[in-house]
Image (cartoon, rainbow, N blue to C red; front, side, top):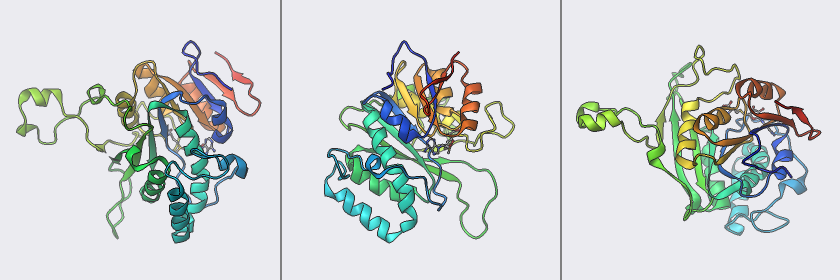
Length: 294
Ligand SMILES: C[S@@+](CC[C@H](N)C(=O)[O-])C[C@H]1O[C@@H](n2cnc3c(N)ncnc32)[C@H](O)[C@@H]1O
């Protein structure tokens, strides 16, 4: 078991997240941000069934926190559209681990493509409870080719769930404000201060020529993750991303005085993170050896 130690280093781990997550202690992270690979329609890698069928409260089968409803909804949904089945079989055990790893006041941000978001929303409501659902954030951007046969799809969906609706941490005052859309309609003081972001976030993608660009193909903008970390954690709290890619969550956490654990099974991603976050300790889950110490 790894320890999440305030006096220890921030961590980057190379390995399959389903192998790494069980080595992290319960209730360690105030924010878990996940940006899994989108459902490509191809079969996802599966793990041993015993490891997957971890449960929200019961050993053996997943019943969901809401009892039998989850299994029924899951069955209905998979019968309705089995293209989602492999993807969910891949995500489900990892989401259960995410839930276990959240602190009681913690928040899960699950970043999905518009094709998957609604299936996932129904399943997560049944799994974690509808009252744990906090927001559906729409990240809207405007870049790239545009379809002429339908409305061009230029948004991602981020589903937000809290571990405990009575205790979760959310500080809207800590979030960077943004310009009013109609500044002429508000007082100069308000205009100067800016407005709180809503659940629709207009934000450019990572600029192909900007300083933030790491070259990792699926890199997300720091500005989008920054809001999540500002609102849902405090200085010194630990945050986790186990589909870490280029390590955007780590970069944001470092700048905001949070601690982080990042996991990715792609050695290219880990190389990018090593360059982007040179202070972090890099480990390999394969042999648990320290791959590189700084
Ligand atoms: C969409 S990218 C994440 C991009 C990231 N948010 C960023 O800003 O750079 C998804 C990442 O998940 C990683 N991944 C996919 N399956 C994984 C697994 N089973 N264990 C660990 N990482 C995995 C991929 O290597 C990829 O880097």
